[in-house]
Image 1 (tube, protein in one colour):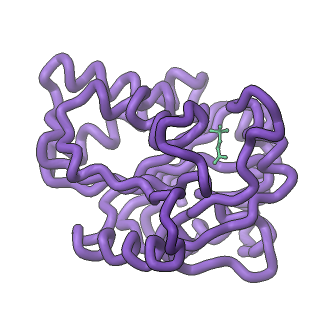
Image 2 (image 1 turned 180 degrees about the vertical axis):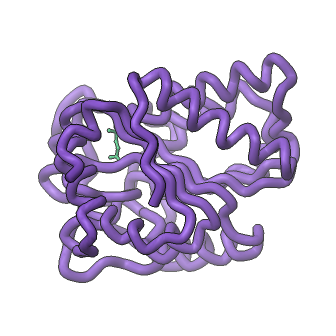
Length: 242
Ligand code: PGA
């Protein structure tokens, strides 16, 4: 695991965007694994800017998002569909058919999960997986537990995550309590993983994912076993690394 400690959130965003852009330049048909939340917003802004300056072209790029809330319509402003369209996809030349986000409204969730895995496989696997990290160490919505899901599954969100993410909803009661998420193996199969973290509230999670032990109660710790994982974090998030 390579750890880059940078000065600011802006530098995290810049470095992450350059890594993604260079991958797309090297292979215009790249398959990207994408994340939502506050952390990747700056990266998306920079990628949009590079697209507008003709530095990168998304016309042949394929994307797979990590997760989506269960039973939250796409049109809901709290949904990850809405987030991705507003913050990224509406501003670049990606083909709609190359965008994949789990369908949280699917009647048959198990089928949706199975098919999501198949689609990733059919696309040739993920070239670069962008990740954030929860304050509880989750990646995607793989929450701390004794048993973690290997493949895309329906997850019960923990109280900690509901607390953290309810800021994206008007009322706490509006925040869904379940989500569909790519599993640990889906993430570990990515050829390269880039995890971004900013701020002191992530310092413990970063410490516990870099301490030399893998612990399912800290799902991100498994990334220590990934061959090509990069952490791009600011000084505040790096504070407690031993
Ligand atoms: P955040 O979320 O970027 O909004 O902090 C990260 C995560 O929960 O994975």
